[in-house]
Image (cartoon, rainbow, N blue to C red; front, side, top):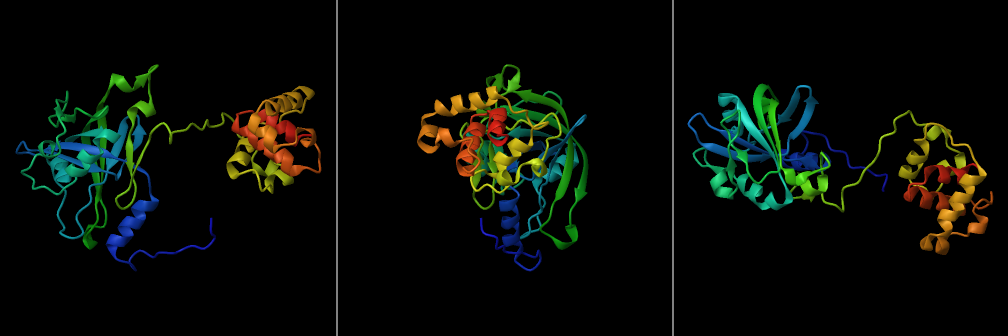
Length: 304
């Protein structure tokens, strides 16, 4: 990646450009499909990507309904929540993408967006605002408080804090008692007209260490300066609780694993892998072992 940077000073470029730049960098953002009902009984449905969870005891989430920079119009969602004190928050799946985009149109407050976008209502238990039937993850929420953001200069919004009173999860996305992210198939918002999808190809796991890792400062210099090992590779090595003791068994296992990998046999001279003059060969072996999850065996190539 280039070391050159473009620096942007808020206020020195048009607001619409700054808005999209900010949303492009602060991404991906989860999408809350917010269902409210006006004091006159008109349902409103609108997606918000200024949204996240901030506490779990009690469960608190927040949304940020912005005020239009062009018209100064306050969002119906904001007005309805202030007047009724409630809303439902519904997760957005890939199959709902086009419908929630349609729901984002600025319809008049006499229009029911459920009808316009074709999504279906599901009765809530504690609140009047309906949930979205098609969403596999739904929350019934009550309003706590709001923080106005820069109202005096226009084009800004609010942070609305909501307490979750009920959570409804489709049995179709639960596997062994937990929510399966692949079955959930959520989308997230990027900048401009871009979205992304949390599907099987893009979801991965990173297990946080249960201890304080040894850190980069305890890695050997040749490993730190390696042109083969990435920052992620080094972080895995630096995440061990202590530098593993080198044993004959660990070295033999490392060689056995690498010798049974067809790709490795094409890239690495196994006979030279412990040769102190062959850092590149060793580093390739370390990288292969880390990719396969053999951390201690990878360290055996470091502790020669």
